[in-house]
Image 1 (spheres, helix red, strand yellow):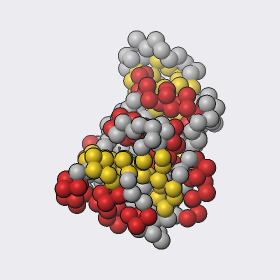
Image 2 (spheres, protein in one colour):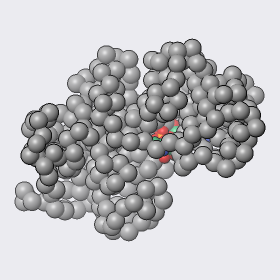
Image 3 (cartoon, protein in one colour):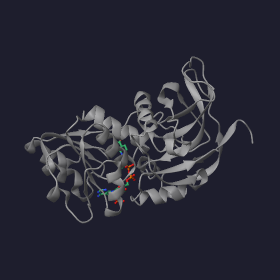
Image 4 (cartoon, protein in one colour):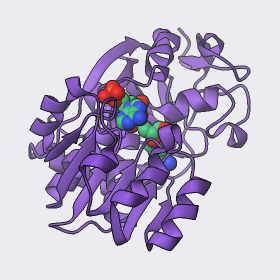
Length: 320
Ligand SMILES: NC(=O)c1ccc[n+]([C@@H]2O[C@H](COP(=O)([O-])OP(=O)(O)OC[C@H]3O[C@@H](n4cnc5c(N)ncnc54)[C@H](OP(=O)(O)O)[C@@H]3O)[C@@H](O)[C@H]2O)c1
């Protein structure tokens, strides 16, 4: 096949999983300070299917669009001025977010400093599962909440992509971790470091826990989870609203209770990715990949993800 084209999954319009179409498109070229990376695996995130459906980051994209923000691969070419990476380096990243990154493809280009060296102990599929979810968990816990040892951290949706990493990072920071997930996930999440498990399908979390310093809310308005979190949070504590901003009902209840709230949007952050790679290589953090799919099976992967029951992450394997 021509060196000027590459395999990719594109969308020509917003809609259901069937709009994801495999084909060939022009291969990108790196500008000065950018690298061209051969993508071995591309991680899938809820923002991918939300954007595909015309929500999420859809308003910031133009069609036709190649979805996908998480990549792990090998540097193929470096643009003028790049001195910290060279062809052959194994890297991982969440480049460009929330601008389009085009991860569901054989090649991406992005500023070299959006990338970090991939964890040496992981294959590309596991490394591609990390960037967006791990940066979300890390930035929310460390930068937004400033979690300290001894604090109580509640992670809602602990079994998902962000949640299972948030549990491990919170534990690494010395926090006591309370986690919500369905019962079949409890033993696994305890192994990852959760101290108290709550089966959200059988118990109302506010009936069984309290004294929380930081809530990492990955559920939002569904089942009124965000607003109900106020009653378990101590005055001065913080609820970080990860999906879709701070719900109005949370704001209404938090103020009078002296509970702080924060919206959140993940940002590209290669220093944090380097720190996370170090934690993974030291064995302090594990990433769970429930299933990998070939690039051309992106629609099937979206259907599974949208079921909202993924344990850890879903990943597309692209090359190799
Ligand atoms: N603002 C940002 O920058 C940002 C960044 C990343 C993610 N997000 C958003 O954060 C949310 C989570 O992302 P993710 O990647 O972790 O999603 P995910 O991996 O698709 O989450 C799936 C998990 O959610 C759990 N779950 C579903 N409903 C639940 C509930 N009511 N209570 C507790 N757990 C529940 C399921 O657990 P069970 O199987 O045990 O039921 C499943 O393991 C998404 O809405 C995503 O768009 C936002």
